[in-house]
Length: 214
Length: 214
DNA sequence: ATTGCGCTACACCGTTGGGGTGAGATGAGA
DNA sequence: TCTCATCTCACCCCAACGGTGTAGCGCAAT
Image 1 (tube, rainbow over the protein chains, first blue to last red):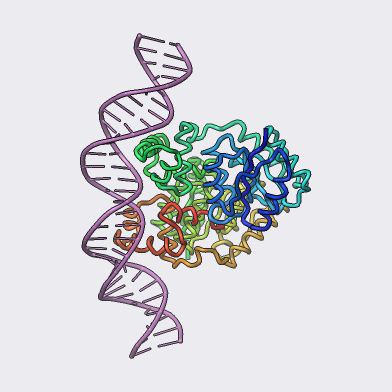
Image 2: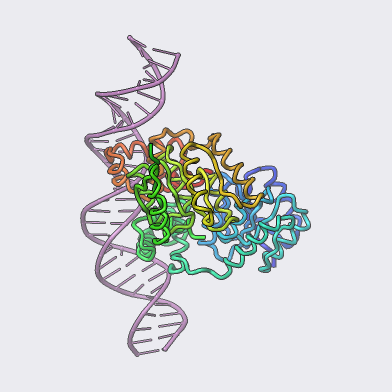
């Protein structure tokens, strides 16, 4: 069984090189490339990859936010974030947001492949060379995420979380209904329930609540 | 000249204690207390304090997001964030978001007063006892913020930034117009310009763009 | 078998938001 | 002085959104 990958990286050359590198492996299939967060979300929604390899530093939608959105829509898709600096504090934030792991840019290609395969199997293999202090935070974050805390969002059904994530991505009700193959009315019904459950008043407040969950 | 303060802290007892502590000082005036981020934003918009003392960990709107909103609406109001842990990575994020400084909860009251007064004068005095690695990040973040980078947001006028921040706080056009004492049509006109300048399609995308600026 | 939940869909209706256009007031700067 | 940017307001039109209620279907728990 092969691993279906989505690459999200805004540097075109790096993105394409990465694709070539990964595509050489028999068990890896790169289903799509995205140049920014918005495109990554769109393509992920369309292809539902097993794994998303995502640059943490992207235009339109940053890696952390995109990770949150994907976690809401595709709980089975794991996100591995690419970070340049080993002390980027966003790594911790991202792991809290539901990223499955992170990879430092200066990782060896063999290690990269190892991390990807391990992640697919459900193993958390963090990039080495991360300073101790960060590593502790990171691991704590990952463990925490495993124990799915009781946030307001946990009151939502899977479908509702999915729709809320789409709304948070900036999609209109019509766009959501098109992508999820339901009617606009259904989307509205779900949103109505979401507003009630989150005790918020309207779309924007619901989105804020969604984006602020750790 | 006295310093007008807003306290935003969700622990009621701590908030009130803090108020008493600060109110004893002749040069400090606590203009309001807020129990969460949303209230902090509302009250700050009403009172326009010189300084906001804000818990980084609040419901409804977290400290970092609230800081971003306040930066957009009240450029002259400085935000000092209260953090419990000296290794909270959100501190760095917050400083990048435009917080003027941070204060660790275990700070001495004399130091707190010193930091407040120094901040009012425009001096960056960070809480001591922060690990070196974080301190470096923090200082870099502060310095970076000083040099107002060329983000998309810099294309907006002050008024437009203000209105966008209000929208990002979840306010409707009517609510924005009420708070800023203009007509709803004016708000709509500004938003229209904002969408064009940011090259986005609609309110939610504009808000996302706003919230993702560092 | 009955109950409950989640997902779906539809109708009605009022409010809000967005696009387009125009235009007056102000203040800074060439 | 004239120009330009900014802020403000108004009007129209239409699409989108929000609130409420109703209802059928499938599924799992009891």
